[in-house]
Image (cartoon, rainbow, N blue to C red; front, side, top):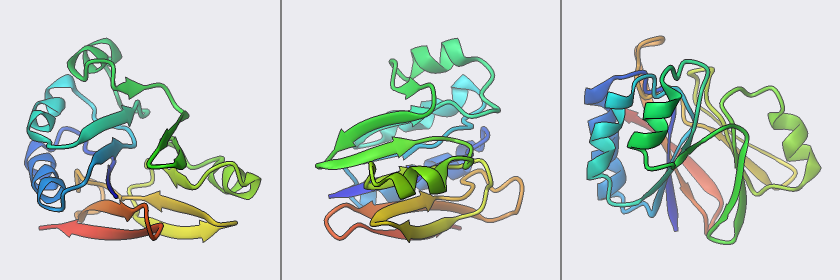
Amino acid sequence: MKIGLISDTHDNIDRIKQAIEIFNSSEVSLVIHAGDFTSPFSLIPFEDLKAEFVGIFGNNDGDKLLLSERSKGKIHRQPYKFEYADKRIIVMHEPDLVDDLAASGHFDLIIYGHTHKAVVKNINNTLIVNPGEAGHWLYGKATIGIVDTTEMKAEIITIK
């Protein structure tokens, strides 16, 4: 099973649309957003997503009420823990506790954002992924991630 990862979209509608096209063509079954949508209108392109969706609030998400309403309650406070495809997953925006959570052995997959830099690493059989910044505003390179839950491997994809 494939899971799409996106973070730090920061209202960049064009890059969000491109990411959704990639997720749909890759036939991901779930997309996880690791925060910083920014405005509720940035959720409009997600209506074309052909997968389940879940997200968390980041530090730049202003109108949490409308973001929550527009997402039909699918955006949560962080950290957000859940199981999917028999994998224990935790999603957060800031990376402060990533290494400690991985060392705990309680999670198969840890997803975070905030730094705008893509990361794929393993600690204690835990896959850790930051898909980077989909919005490309900070470093000028838009990236997303796709995780294969069968092999527990992640790929970072550049949006052009």
